[in-house]
Amino acid sequence: MFKSRRSLYRKRRRRFNLLTMLAGIVLSLMIVELLARFLLAAVGKINEIAPYKGAPRDFTVYRPKFVDQTQQLYDGLPDLGDLAVQRDLGVGYSLLGKQQSDFWRINEQGFRDDDPVPLVKPKNEIRIFLLGGSTAFGQGNANNQVTIASYLEARLNQRITQQRRSPQKYRPMTLPPSEPELKQALALPPKIRDGKYRVINAAVPGYTSGNALAQLALKILPYSPDAVIVLGGYTDLMTPSDQNLTDIPNTEAFLENATGHFWTYLTQQLKHLVTKTYLAKAITYWVLQPQPSVSQRSLVMRGDVMPLKKYLPQKSDELERRLTRYRNNLRHMLRLTAGQGIPLLVAVQPEITGRGNNKIKPAEKEILQQLGKVYQKQVQANYPKLVVAGQQLEKGFPKNIKVLNLYTIYQNFPELAFHDAIHLTEAANIHVAKSLYYGLTSLPKLQVASFYSNLDQ
Image 1 (tube, rainbow, N blue to C red):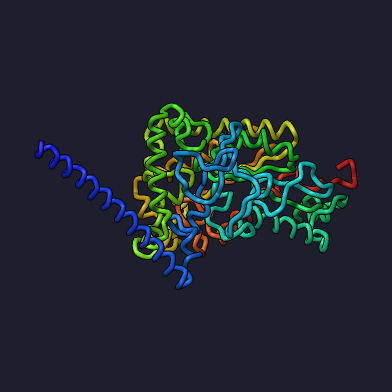
Image 2: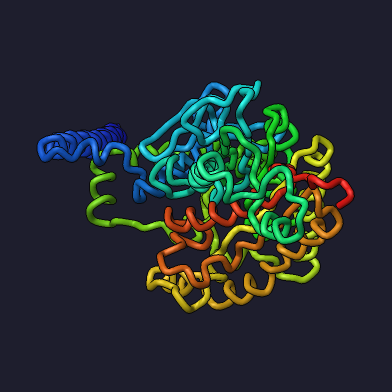
């Protein structure tokens, strides 16, 4: 009797000691967290630390944040960044409208644009939509004004100003009858349609040609575009052939495995509880200083990213299926645009293995070293086949589609061009915008037609 009471007392005492110890640990952590906040506020760093998400700001501000229709985070999906993305059954996913950061602004239609885009086009406006993935979107760029779309719009409107100021420098509408004067007139560049050009950045990070096709049909054509540009190709090469478009990652797996989803949710909530403390943020920010890998920077829609070479097709038949998917998606885009008399400009985006060795910078050499020889060899062998897939359509429909090969556009570029495998510096954006400008202005449907004054000619 006496022994049983003593053993019961010891058990209670052990429980009390354990609870006391746990309470002490929690209380100590709370005190340390309060001290951390006090010190950060005292040195004026609390506003710098508050938005920190375990990686440099210019990286996390462009990473997706998956939200539902009520703009709440999806349970179990990682809170990767600041760019709010919501599931859209028609196109896979889309950007949430009316959001902004110190790097980008998304208008109410979900386009990267400072101003709204009315459905009814203003009378004098010439609308050009830029579709594509993160490169077209302007991943890593400082603001909306230094993206490809913005530079292209500025260049087109400069052309209109030049045409109005110096019409003699451009081909006249009525061609002269005499042969010497006719040759001189035909040597001049044709005028493009007069009006106010607006280039709308409708690109969405992570989009493949399958996403862009659905977006074109459901979300772009109602805005009555005068031309459509599709800048992409890389995600088509990196995405398995059984996926026609990119979706919010892991949603189907969660639906099929409710138990796994529940445990993932619990562990992520615990992780967020720890990583969102100012103490953890301060240690990570100043001591650990983790840097995203080149794979994480290049494939922005993925949470846990493998080395990029793992996403490349490992067999020739898989490569062919991916190329066929890309070609078919472009063909469907061509049918949609040609049916409405809209010219289509397809540009295969730049990629770092096409940089060459003439002007490459040390930072870009480091990126290539991280990517590895296997990745470089496979991309250099396979990437030009994306161009061929588009050019096959151009040969069949030369009046409706034009294809640009931008893979090697930076071989002699004197400045830094790449932040990672595919994302561009602001100077490199200007170079792409220049190529797209020449591509657009060569499209007959954007040019002003000239007529012979002598009908016999």
